[in-house]
Length: 79
Image (tube, rainbow, N blue to C red):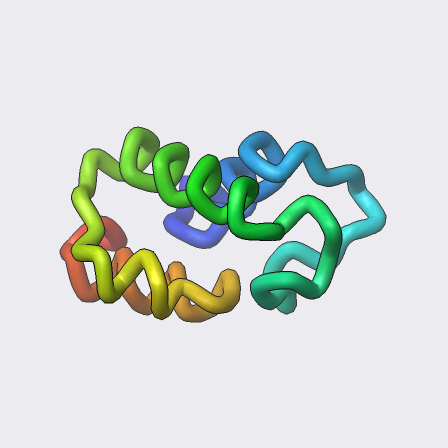
């Protein structure tokens, strides 16, 4: 399973999204589910799924699905 597929699944589960949401183009606060509380749940779920630990600045900067992909690749999670 690709990094994008795995991450898409984490977003869907952590934010409790349905099929109508275009996850790959999702940005922070685009939907009610991705508020500050949802953001922390999402970060924790991503860290668990990919066995990574984000720095505080990365948590703050994670503003979209695409940014999350880039961060994970930077941490070597996409290899």
